[in-house]
Length: 189
Image (cartoon, rainbow, N blue to C red; front, side):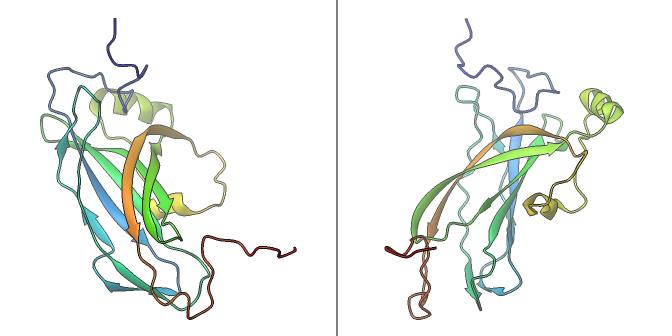
């Protein structure tokens, strides 16, 4: 019997899991800002250390804090958090595990986000090649995943989840009569 309830615990189904492997994962993050937003403090991008995947729970834990402060001139658009996960094998070779993004919450407080990650599938020969020698296809510009436009003929493979905990503090939004995260009672459309 399989003690792991997940029917496909390998986030990368093209590689066979070796129980003795020291497969590690790292993540790079990037805040995607709309045109009317500026960075006041912190950095827009960062990279975590490589964490070993725990076989028991099939997770890699980063616990990598970062702090940023933004200012905006208007509420058109809202920042997004872009995540790129890399898989590092026992030989130290890094390969793409997946990309994902989430909208940064608009309400103050603590928020738990689940960011679904995926990677481009590529054509048949790319798939066969990556199965034997690695080297999954990647995007020239990973920001493409944050666009809402449909991309015909574009296929992806889901690769896992990234759990992120964000604490949001809003300042001076009430002086600009902005109402975020709530709707007006009694308003008609």
